[in-house]
Structure formats: C-alpha cells, structure tokens
Image (cartoon, rainbow, N blue to C red):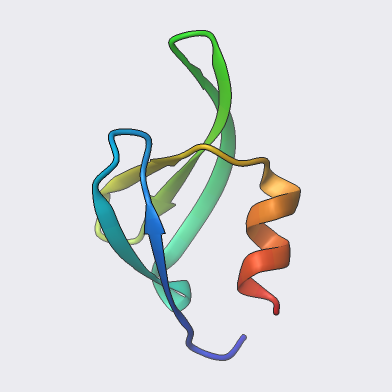
Length: 62
C-alpha cells in the first residue's frame, strides 16, 4: 500500500491526520449509540470516526 496522509475529523470534532502505513486494524464500534469505527494505529493510539469500514477503505484507496 502506498503511504497516504488523510485529514479527518474524529467523533469529538478534533482534526487528525492518519498515515495509512501506521494503521494496524479497523474495527466497528458503537459510541453513544452511534455506529462508527475505531482505527487502531501501530503506536497503540486509537481514532474514532463517524463512518463505516467500507467508507473508510474507499477513502484510503482513492
């Protein structure tokens, strides 16, 4: 996979930049009753995003 930096807004409204080579996994989660995903990074940090896994992978594979 090519390295790609993606600027997104997490569930709290904070802007974050995701380096696609640092993603270790993406899981479905539910925060406050909302369906969302949690992106786990190789540095053990996690980013919660208001989108589906399919939407996320479409975004990083554009």
